[in-house]
Structure formats: C-alpha cells, structure tokens
View 1 (tube, rainbow, N blue to C red):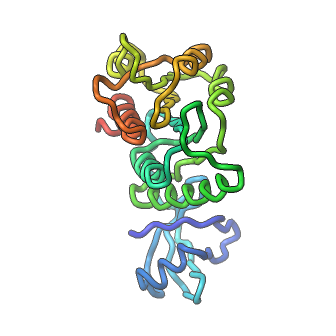
View 2: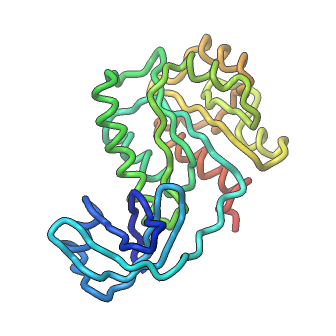
Length: 248
C-alpha cells in the first residue's frame, strides 16, 4: 500500500488533506482515484489507513479509517556527523543513510572541507536534503524521516558532544592500532552511537585530538582509502549490522 507524508493528522474526525508534491504525485504520476486506499504518516511517526474521497488540482482529501502499524525501531540510534560534500555526493549520502536507518545527519565544516556554504545557501540545501530523506523514508518504510541538523563547525560539534552519553567514534585513516570491527566487538552494544566522518581530505591530527578530548575514539575502516560518502555509508551499515536491525 502506498505511503504518503502529511504535515498534520486531524484529531477531530475531519478529512485529512494531502497537498504539495505528495498530492501532485498522487494525481499526476500515480493517477490514483476516489476509493483508493493509502497509508498517511506525520513527522512524529503516527500512521493511519486512509481512503481517497476527492481529488482537486493541487490537493487530495482522505477519510481516515484507523491506525496503521508502525515498523519496529532499530535497537540503536545512529547520529552521523558528516563534513559537507559536493552536491551529488551529499545527495547520495542523505538518501542512502536514510534507507540504512541513520536517525540524524549533522553536516559540519572542518579544516579541509572544500565545500563552503553561507547560511542562506545551506538553508536551501537543507530543505532539499529533507525532501530526499522524506522520499527515502517512504521507500524503505521508516517510521519517520532522518533528521537533517543545522550546519556546525567541527569544533562546535565536538564540544557540544562532550557530555552526551553513548559510543562516540571518529573515522581516521591514520589510526594505526584500532579498526572499527575491533572497537565494536570490544564494546557493549545498544543505545546511541555518534560517528564523525571527515571531508575528502580527511582530518588533521589536531582535529582528531580535539575529538578525543570530547570522548571520541579514533578508528579506521582498514587498509582501503574510501571516499568520504562511501566511508559514511559503510560505518552506518556496519553499525546496523552489528548492533541494529540489518543483522536480522
């Protein structure tokens, strides 16, 4: 059954209205009609079965029938902190991280970040990424879309994480002694995981030491040098496999 997001689910028994891009997709692409059944979801993850009662040119009215079951949440909460990447790479990362089950994506800038965005341009990008995350959530049947956080600097990011409890890891290709597999299998699973992935040029030694001071443990993904977006998706998938819901 098709799933669609709405801004607000009515609590007074009235019709549920789908508008914007979701409505245009129903009307012009899917060509659904009166009597078709769907599932509607709000940003908080509530779900209801609905039946289409009428279609306009820019909106669709539904009659809600009752609550729909929600998918089970992952046993772990993943917060992925990613240095800004070029447009196509960042779009891909947002889509696939959402599908894998990352809960929150925190973009940041660091010493070697190539991409530079002012707050206005970042606001436009953030709305674009939120739309990608929404579509990915529908595709993979997530309870709610991945959250896209405001842009931060690396130092502000790690300082803010200092008092947060959970497993904290920073990927660093120059880490000589600890790989991610060894770190995960020597640590109790569950709870919250915060993972920081750097830009194309990686982190400086100074940045890694700053992260250590806030409780982050440096780890590598082995001998291969991966692109930044590949490393981010790899650590997200490994976390879900080892501690989350990709392991069955």
